[in-house]
Image (cartoon, rainbow, N blue to C red; front, side):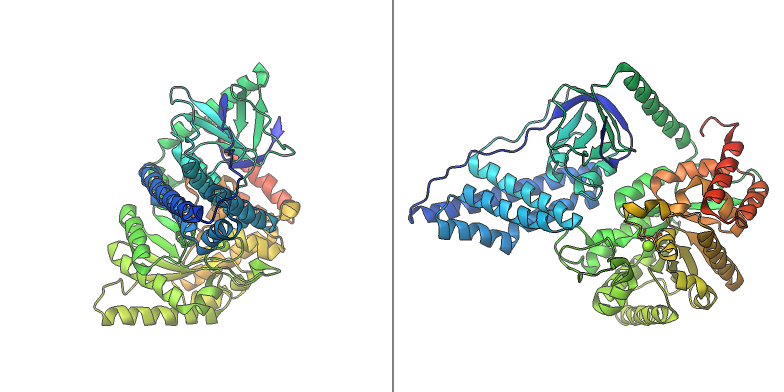
Length: 580
Ligand code: PEP
Ligand code: MG
């Protein structure tokens, strides 16, 4: 068994196809001065062919998975046009009299080494993009054939040293059972794409310098736990075949609940909406019966590109999402960058504590034009359905007032220009900073709704960095302090007569259903994959009993006790159903 990192969930069983690495035979002789013009010509020709090819792949990929995922190739096009990358290549040709392909190879090595040296996962992933684009350019300069994948006659598990987004884009998802890569983390573009395509993936194989797999080996991969078995004994294959089939059966069985309302046995209805960051995720959510979008993480529209998205681009995406959601509300959260979410064209300052630093609304209130562009796009989209605006990371009343002041300016400007928008658009805030909970009664007077972001709330109240694996055991969403904050927020919202929902990961945790019922929180928003599981849980819950259990949890003193109590209740109340 080899331990790696979970890239995309699910179990896959099949034969390995090991993708050969791109290795080149490069000429090392020096050019004459007269050859230089020809080398530049070859370089420009190679760039043009590569650009056409990337555009073609982008188009193809767009048809399979949608515009968000295919926009990754915009980043590749940007690299081909990047003056720093191009100057490096041209400089090597001009000053060192080297052939175009040698210059490209040396430029790739230069930037990849530089990015790899940075202690920054994001930049390491960008090094992969540079390698990918550079290799494509090299391929054309050398006239080398594309590395071919097995013919699409038999499904296979793709194994590669590393897998670039464009290599992944060439794959036919109907034939790729799973993916294993030696290099790559959870945030690599390839992992993001594998998740979007629903292909189980394991990457970052621990302690492996070379791929411990050969073409034809039988593999079992467990994408949930990041485990790979190579030529395992029949018992392992049997066990995982069972798990895989069970997962598929459960998925199919749950699917029948898509059209059913989430109502407890004794008649309390919950509204289950989706957290999305792309149109593709919206489609998945709607297939799972989401009642609207409770959190649209718009920062993903700003990623994988080389400049900020224009008002028009944003408007188009928001309008599309709003129209597709068909009458149910779409809560559009304004830009929430900073922390672990970075933009490569807008480097944020190095910070000792990025999660306590320049983030979210703090950036929007400083970069007012950027904020206004987004608010304009959201307001314009508000005439196409039910849109709500949500500000992230609010910690004071001043921030709400300042943001609303800017919103009013944007509204006035639209009115002046005769552009319509919903004048009664609701405005709410994320409750994710403990200070916001403590003054929730004050904040509730100035907004239309609260949405509790437990992901950040837990990290801030417990002082446990949500990214730090070493202290992951201390990150306890059921810690009594968290439950108290949830209760305080719900009470403040109820007292002020505004709505309150939960959109952090805890909303997608089936065990938490009794807590929501006890606190009178009837709106939840969660990742698309959690919707049907949570709905199943709600359907199997008797609210009256669940409230009693949750109330006793609220008196307990440790997270472990609370978790155990909720687990016990979940087990007891699902005994009679086949889907647990
Ligand atoms: C949260 O903090 O709970 C939340 C939903 O926001 P994000 O995960 O995007 O920080
Ligand atoms: Mg958050």
